[in-house]
Image (cartoon, rainbow, N blue to C red; front, side):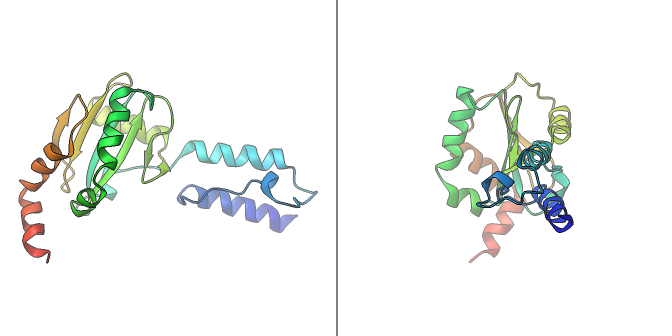
Length: 176
């Protein structure tokens, strides 16, 4: 029983940084009788809802960030921006772009991982975007805001802004 408790604890810790889904005790073909599936499920859910801490500084000088603020995933602007984002993954990757979804309701994410509510609050405060607003903000590798839009931003406009940046010009010259 003690080793199972340690495994559950380690899984919970790993869940804060791992994108792999948890295996709930109820998902096991023969769950140990000494562990209550309901307890394991509640602990996992609690851990996942907290999310990872997101800091722009962790991406500085490595990636450009596209922050998409929306009231919810049901927002038509949000849905349109996600379709635009998915339309050219090669161009997005070539420009070292990472998407951060900051939602008023629902699960805010970066790279498929949930972001903590505290991190969402910091981003909203830092960029002055309320829970009810839609906004798309491009953050450069230097960590500063480069472009902002209150409507979905098409990739051509985004790429023009990025490709005009001195750091991007240097990247294009140095890549084969």
